[in-house]
Image 1 (cartoon, rainbow, N blue to C red):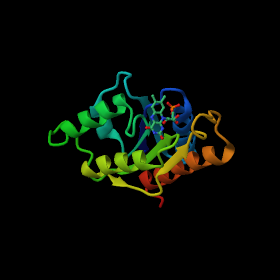
Image 2 (image 1 turned 45 degrees about the vertical axis):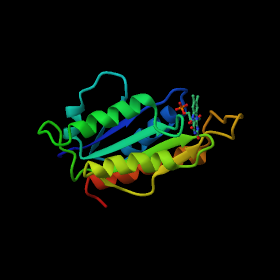
Image 3 (image 1 turned 45 degrees about the horizontal axis):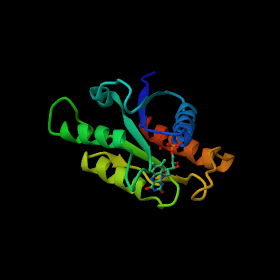
Image 4 (image 1 turned 135 degrees about the vertical axis):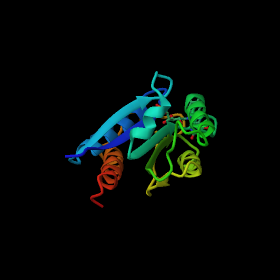
Length: 164
Ligand SMILES: Cc1cc2nc3c(=O)[nH]c(=O)nc-3n(C[C@H](O)[C@H](O)[C@H](O)COP(=O)(O)O)c2cc1C
């Protein structure tokens, strides 16, 4: 059987978005015939590896109203290579997840806009989760929140495998 591939790239400073990323991976793994790779920005991986994916899922916490600095570098780097032959993400399937504490979900929208500028076909819904109330962080994710992340991974994996 020819395996489809999903790559998840995320950042996390204090672990909340990392739990989201792991649940997204679980969701991808629930679909037969789909391989998944998980990369944290700032750890060494070649962006040309993104070429090998059928679908890409990007996730970031909100920091000062935007993505983290490292996620910003990553997205800029990918955008900088968009015209080169080394990287062609056009036509791939995309998914987005993000976390925030008080700002609403606009970081997810920002990531979506960047992905769309690369020609990636972003699938809704984006998953944007609040990390507790300002000053009182929830930290531990509840089952409902985890399930939203698993559902995202599953939906993207099914599209990558061509079953939906
Ligand atoms: C330095 C710093 C800046 C932050 N800036 C924002 C912000 O601008 N808007 C917001 O909604 N949350 C902000 N947050 C809260 C984080 O987005 C939230 O706690 C997030 O879920 C943390 O994810 P992580 O545990 O994966 O790092 C900030 C947190 C820190 C520590």
